[in-house]
Image: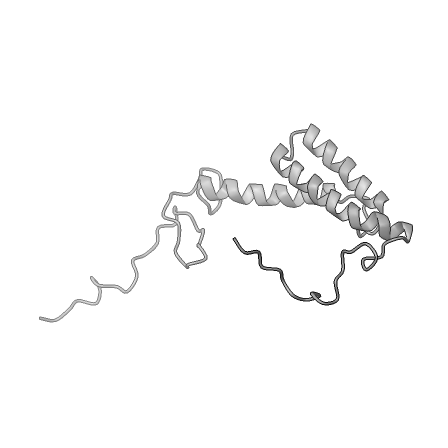
Length: 138
């Protein structure tokens, strides 16, 4: 029985009113485009907006900050973080994480900036285990 190639195309045509988002696995979203958005459904348009906002927030967070090489840079970042949390642009949970990371950086940068950071005398450096990862037994 002969097959009609017009009836059995390899890929069905894609309506223009569908979302254009493609996953990492190569699948396309099947939702309809959001009204007013040129190519994405409501969900993916909102995700895209969050990514754009995240870039803006990151730029504001690091405004006036050097390379985090001094306590002053970290203090400036924490001040910017405070402003962003107070304005509701960063969720409190993310702000806590960023503040913790800032504290960890400050624990290293502070002694280095003062010139009294010696990892060997403080016991933070062991040449016998340098480069090895410690595995804890449970």
